[in-house]
Amino acid sequence: MSASALTALAAALTVVTAVPAAPHPVPVTARAETPVVYDDEAGGNANADDPAVWVDPTRPGRSLVIGTLKEGGLDVYGLDGRRLQHLAAPPAPGADAAPGRFNNVDLVYGFELNGRRTDLAVVSDRGRDRIRAYAIDPAAVAAGRAPLRDVTAADVAPVFAANEAEVDEQTTSYGLAAYRDGDDAYVVVSQRERSRLRLLELEDRGGRVGYRTESTLDLPTSFALPGGTSWRPCADPGELPQVEGMAVDQEEHVLYAAQEAVGLWRVELDDEEFERPELLDRVREYGTPWTYDEVEEECVLDTAHDPGLGGEHLSADAEGVTVYHGADGAGYVLASSQGDDSFAVYAREGDHAYLGSFAVTDGTATDGVQHSDGATVVNVPLGSAFPKGLLVTHDGEATPADGDREGTNFKFTRWDAVAAAFPAPLTVDTRSFDPRDAD
Image (cartoon, helix red, strand yellow):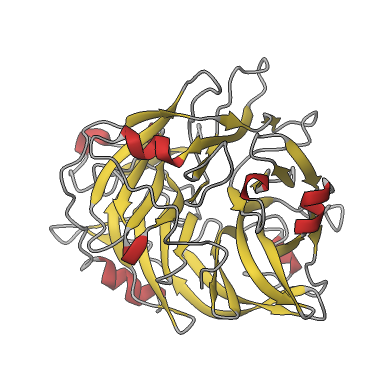
């Protein structure tokens, strides 16, 4: 669907009516956390961003959490938060070129690579505009060896850029979500500072992982308001409202995408194509006029003239999205409301009714979560530490601080703790969905 058609479509989109829910985010606390990383020269320019959970096929308590660190590369952790492996992002190919920068990560189970079923961690490399693939070796996990190895094909092309000069302009691969359809595997990739999404099919290229484009979708960049006016979301000059947080419902093949300054979209993936998008919820700031402060280089919202067209559950930016799968279409869609440090919960089925929000607050084991980007949830038991599932969230403000250094990391929270915190407890279903068998 073209950008112009979608701009016209935006005027007719209807936001789903919410059902009554808890008036304030309910508090939960994390059980474990990863080491704090620092985005400075001493810290290797590491900035935690997005997590994924690999479920061990024989001993779930030995499962792994894989987290992106942007220019700092990729870290692999045990369920106790200990770092087990570090993988560097690719260096810059030239003096004036951008280095690799890993933004988002997701899992593909059972990809046929060189004749063998192989689990993959797939990563969006924002710096070089590629998708990187890492094979996960269960035997290495069992033996205590480094479990991930790079299996990216040498000839993979930029996802969005037409050439290497365009790569260095950095309107490149950003958010990422993966899914399987039978024996085929796909990733949805968003473009930085643009509203474009691209659907790629993974392919085996002589024992290495490549990809090819299947479909492209441009989400709206301008929205019709009552009275015949239009509104464009707050952005720096030359930027369009981008998407980063995304997740695919592995059973229904539905994409949920958070357009940061707009809201949460639902897009069906049918026959490897994007279908008509539906806006499920808007950020609170939707429709608010703004100006750009050139001195401070930031947008300034005119909240005194807020027309009241925004939603009530997401404060910009709308960020990390993840799906909790339950039986017969039940379950939840979770979205990070970065502007107020909370996570909104919507029903996975029907009209995706809003069910409430939660916040990860300071506890005895870890500090709380602020400014969260990525999140992922797993419903299956993961050993004694997480017997009823695991939620992993990025923390954009890890404390205590190390002087003026800004630290980030990942927090691990029991899913049953999240579920029990709600006045009407959420479902805990450890049996009806297996992420290793989903297609």
